[in-house]
Image 1 (cartoon, rainbow, N blue to C red):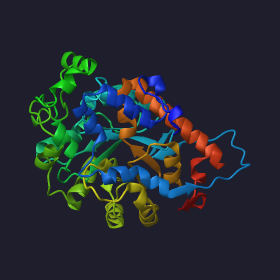
Image 2: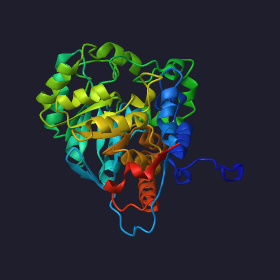
Image 3: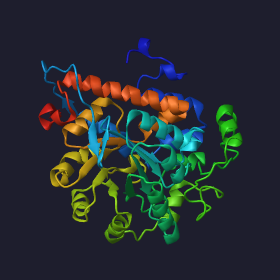
Image 4: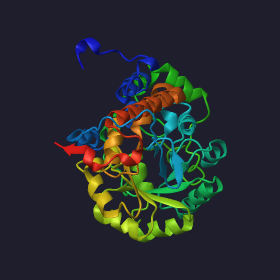
Amino acid sequence: MPSSLRHRVTRLSDCHKIADFRELARRKLPFPVFHYIDGAADDEATKDRNTSAFDEVDLVPDVLAGVEHIDTSVTVLGKKTRLPLMLSPTALQRLFHWQGERAVAAAAEKFGLWFGISSLATVGIDEIGANFSGPKMLQYYYHEDKGLNAALLEMTKAAKFDALTLTVDTIIGGNRERCLRTGFTSPPRFTPANVLSYATKPRWALDYLFRERFALPNLEKHVAAGTNVATSIQSYFSTMLDQSMDWVAADRLRQDWGGKFCLKGIMSVADARRAAEIGVDAIMISNHGGRQLDGSRAPFDQLAEIVDAVGDKMEVILDGGVRRGSHVLKALSLGATAVSGGRLYLYALAAAGQPGVERALGLLEAEIVRDMKLMGKTSVDQLKRENLRWR
């Protein structure tokens, strides 16, 4: 961008793309919290590749297609949604903005989108189920504590969630070096190295100290970690999750749930085929936002071969790296059912709460609509590989 057009992002109206929300979030958050959202594992090469992978493919538009009216809707896991976009489940959202999951759920409901909450959510499964009518999934973490596993399943059933998504790429915590340097924990641990950062963000500090007590309500009856005992996410994954989890355990969970079931964190064709064999409804091609295995492939790089292998047997959702409407169109052209992402709305949540998330989704919707018209497509199912060229 020419230097004359660069602008300072100091308020919500300055945000015109996802990168702008990132800058506004950086300005508003204490640095340990911002770097938790923004950071990834090791050298963060995979995180960067998740987005740059889209640049390897060009869109080739058709013209004179009569695009006055277009349909951007898709059906995902049995639910028709306004856009081929899902809001991935992410943890600890009330640390980013006091509204947390409530803001994201309300924005998703307004836009008619799938919304996921994490087992490590800061709002209860029961509250989300009672107050939001849009399609909802729980991101299920398979704990060593079998009582906790059973409780999570029962809470999700009671709240009438529409899908259960088992995360399979957190068998041990990734090496999140930014968090090690900043000392980020849940709940926040104030240290001489980071206390000034919290103190210089008084709006965040006042919200954290004087609004409702920070907690992980879906876990706190079973484990103190994350609510009453400060712990890093890396440590939580490495000590609380069951490293013996295997395909038998995943299939048992699918049967115990009995509803729409998704595996999040599938990256290989072999694993995608195994998922199809046990009868899952969908997979999310995901590397956890680059937060686990640095040096792993980007989801977009793996999309075509996984779709070719199992796309006729289950829904394939691309998760990670999406920052533009054109990214959505490229993934759909390769055969993805839909795309999902976390940072694309977390930056906006941190920047401005529910209005921020709604503005981000509105911008992405406008990009998807505009790009479909420029591509000469009136419905999502018209997006094909013939409209792509690899560089």
